[in-house]
Image (cartoon, rainbow, N blue to C red; front, side):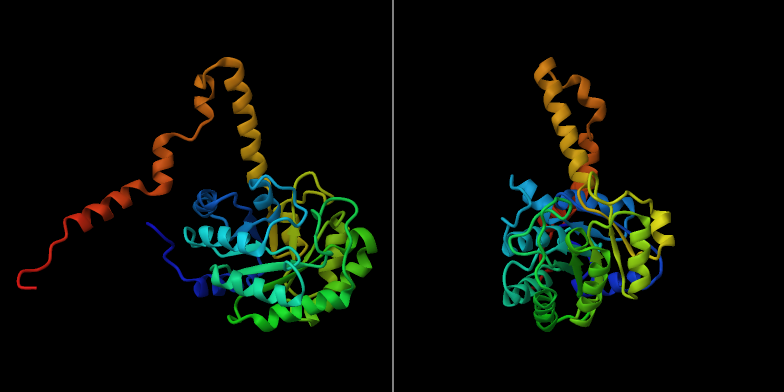
Length: 301
């Protein structure tokens, strides 16, 4: 009730241990703190905070319009309510290497288990759109070095994302990945790989944890968890799945309400009031409040 029962340090250690386990971690993207609680309740390994989802939630396209403080605020809201390790999309670090360093410390302070920085130019574009541009490899290495040097908790995971596959090809993306590990990255996120063969080639080339982005309607084939685990990947990411499901349901519900003038036919598709209260822990809050209200000081105090 009120907050998670674990500390950021323990969640970071747990995330590192799970990454080293050899099994695939399945990580959905949360829309908000409530959905993060549902991710935990369903038994997933970690929760993700997508920059695209936060931007969309604010009514903005994913083109670098959000700020580090906005994502840190959302991160803190989510880490308050879940015991899962949380990984966040920190875009390009929101500026120069010094900004990337500050961003990392903001995310540490928000209770996250890790973040990823990408090598796109600033402002960035969605990773599955055409027309992306990446900075020179050395510039991205400076971002990562600044972030690594600013890190206070060595268990906080610094992941590097490369968007170079689309514009420079697979071999260049792999070379960048290796350079980013040398600059201080603990793990790699190769964005927009085309097919199973490319995922396999990236895995053969590096020996750090790898993330596979299984976003819908994008450049990559949607590979199932068994395939990704057999390929040696460590994280299967589903960054926008819950947002797309939820917004699809909202659109359908609005059309039905407008056409029928009542929500009666929608009731079977809704989460019930009792289920909502169960997820939020209404009973625990009531018990806490009663215990405080009934508390009295011992005689003679």
